[in-house]
Image (cartoon, rainbow, N blue to C red; front, side, top):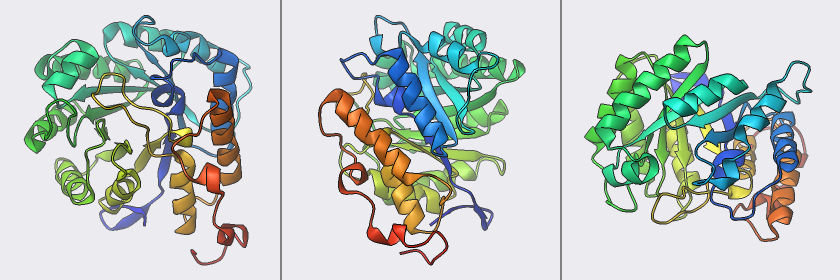
Length: 320
């Protein structure tokens, strides 16, 4: 299984969102030094992008209070750099972008919820206002020379409203495309997605413009996360967002649940003969460290079971 665009195989890009989405609902605040170690471990293992944090009010999400400082330390001249990962940050509004630009964020991530209720709980804005402001903010980030990814949150359903009209999702995506914003993630914030829905919606998204670089972000609330990831890849998705140990969840949705686990995604990809360049053992070690820090079992599987024995035989053999 591999992402395909126009019939051509594409390398699956891995975006670790654990330091942001994974931690934002946790009550135990993680020390900055521990976060930096987890970012470095993800990058050193071969992950392509790491979401270091989000630029939100510290009283609303205390876990993200040190985001600016983390970026300053990671991007300071002469700062040691493990691996090749792009350092990304989530921005919710214009002030957030000002902070992101000031502290060295390399890729700015922004989003609009397709659910009116979730949008207001998450940003204090309705969908129409949020779309207008996020598009304008994203354009500013592009003009400042930053890479930009935009997303449609609650794209597959909402914990408050239930089903979300696909036309509303596509209307937001069209606004992105019209603004020249072509790196677009569809986020299953509530975990409601199922594979046939995923394939249909990515097909409709890709039909909007030939230059779209699609990403996916699935929560495993109802156990369909991994199936949805591979449905997205079959449909042409290029980037998978995931979290170490399956940690995470949106604090502003009705039922917060973890993301698809990074090490689980890499394990399946490697069984398919893909992304053998990523150090799976290192990712398993990272997930175990996160689990030990929080002193509880995390929802991911492979960090508990270990990989299937076939993966240890050869990096060159046929997929197991």
